[in-house]
Image 1 (cartoon, rainbow over the protein chains, first blue to last red):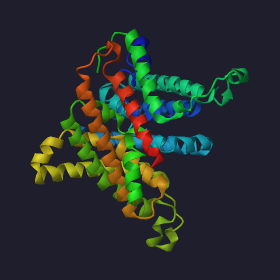
Image 2 (tube, one colour):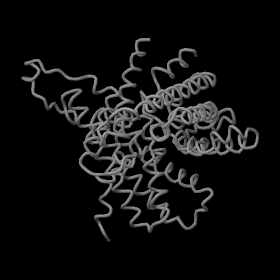
Image 3 (cartoon, chains in turn green, blue):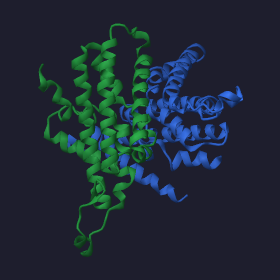
Amino acid sequence: MNIKKYLGPLSKDNPILVQVLGVCSALAVTAQLKPAIVMAISVTAVAALGNLIISLLRNTIPPRIRIIVQLIIVAALVILTDQILQAWFYDISKMLSVFVGLIITNCILMGRIEAFALGNKPIPSFFDGLFNGLGYGLVLAVVGFVRELLASGSVWNHKIIPDSFYAHGYMNNGLVSLPPMALILIGLLVWIQRSGSKTEKI
Amino acid sequence: MIEIFVRSIFIDNMIFAYFLGMCSYLAVSKNVKTSFGLGVAVTFVLVVTVPVNYLIDNYLLKKGALSWLSASLGGLDMSFLSLIVFIAVVAAIVQLLEMVIEKYAPALYNSLGIFLPLIAVNCAILGASLFMQERNFPNVAHALAYASGSGIGWLLAIVAFAAIRERLRYSQIPKPLQGLGISCIITGLMGLGFMAFLGM
């Protein structure tokens, strides 16, 4: 098995930055690092398992109703994730609110299922979902890290920027915690990523 | 109720405050006309699905919601099923609308045609249903006001953005920033502009 083929989504084929999939939920949950990581793990799990299940069923699903079948399978997986989060990470699940449910309509899932799982064997599909989820998680983690650092001077709820900085007039930038800044950050990330690798524009 | 309506257009705007429906927002905003078509279709589907989901949630799924059927079912809490039911309702209604519009308004069908199936997986639709559930509106009219407000807000955002993008073609942008990069930054700036409504 060629492992290199699957590593693409981490940078060169990143689902958010290059394939433009799943931007919707990427932005709202990144005000802090912790919910961003939890969201990333949830999406990775659902993407990998969803791809695996669809791939196992791919020869039995009639093409006419495949969208509904895919939605139902993904929805069932998301309900599981939601219940697990509510049981063990209640505060984070409250913070993510509707965005756990919105994993269902996250374009990464449907996009990868349509583009990969319907035409490939289960094991490669599983890894394809896994690495696309990880690529998504990477962007989420970077954005979450930058936003939490700039907005409250902390990372993972630990103070990072020392008090002496504040004494000299350093101030937290509250603007970064507001939603529009997430978009601007993603825009800058896209800029950095595309100036590094030569990909066609979308 | 008017407050809910205005609030959901400007302050809780689907795109600028929650980033819902970003995928089709970025993909279909190349010119004003098609984005207006998509905006109308999204508003339409929202206005139909959110009240339907509201009724389902309140009379079938919520804790104690089944007590109108029989007292013994009063304690049943099936709200964990709401995700799967909501998405099924959205998919079914989109399918239904597609058939109805094709039959009775072929002109409209031709202009909306390709967008309708896409709407089933538009985050804005499912998102509105989930927000409706979270906010506990007192009756179905409030849910309707919320749905139409969100839809119009989404329409406003995508048309404004498409208009900006049409102008953008004539400006010089650094190559790696073209396309997605500049779109994100513009949307961010528009969002900052919309935050001015917060004081309303």
